[in-house]
Image (tube, rainbow, N blue to C red; front, side):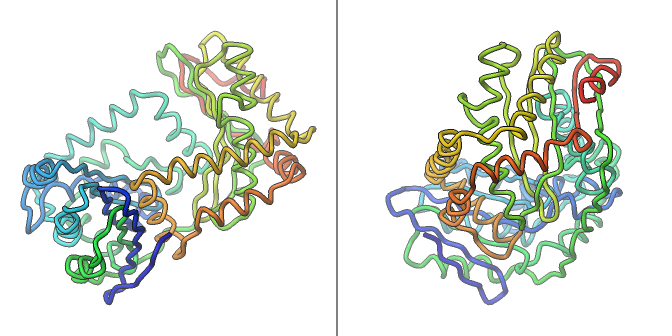
Length: 420
């Protein structure tokens, strides 16, 4: 399905040709994110994502870049996570050279103009305020702070307002020079590709400057002997809750079992939590379970947006469902359904050129290899009922729980009583 080639400057080119389409996603993934930051510059990865759209040597303004993208009916954007950042343009296939020209110029010769940096500080502050006014989003940032503590994995990707306003151009240049190296990046083309795709990659990306590269500070795991509860007091009409435990890193095969367990618990309208919390009791509109992995740790979480007056009942129901999984094996039908759901979701997502580019790009810059969908599914297929129960017994221990809540609650006492 995909082809991999290393360009002469060390940049990895990954192509996926889908000739039945008329579009192509051009994406550059970089092994850079907020866990590479110090407290002093805890926002710089995200800030740079903004600045790369503010003008380059060849395309000297945000207006110029936006006008070109709009004039060909394309869409462009970027995303910053804790371990990876990526930039992309999705366009008609005939505009692949122009998309390449734009992206390469943005990354290799961004102006990082002082006046634009100062102007963008105000934009990012408002972005932070917008997200923090959205409890369904902000609860996740607070949860990771609770689970991972005061170290880079526990810090917000967007930093805080004080850090945003104090960032300097010099710090941005140093950060780019330390991480935006061809050997720490991958170039993806996914969609209807021309025969000379490698020549296009060579033309626009082989002159990316060689830069140094440093690693992130490893996650310092501390043994958790007591559950943690945090309440963020906010006048809301709904209580947002995340209950979780430490999960498995990107190299641990238990993450495949965790994916199956999350599917059984809360990935669909027929999942256990959806039936118990929403359908039978009407306590929430949304409830779900999820496992996510970083390079050296992970998290297994349950999220629910609950009625304020029903939050305690909702928490009790969630805990009861987790406990059932530790004492009873799931049925063969449930296990089969979870595996088929994973297979079906991958099939649907694979129809998106953006999804494919993001998946393959992230996989490569983090792992230096590609785990194909078929390889993932083979490992999912090997999961047994015993595996699911054993993992539930390993994860769902009350002393390992982390509980983060946003809502109009004054203290944690009642929540602690329920966890006890």
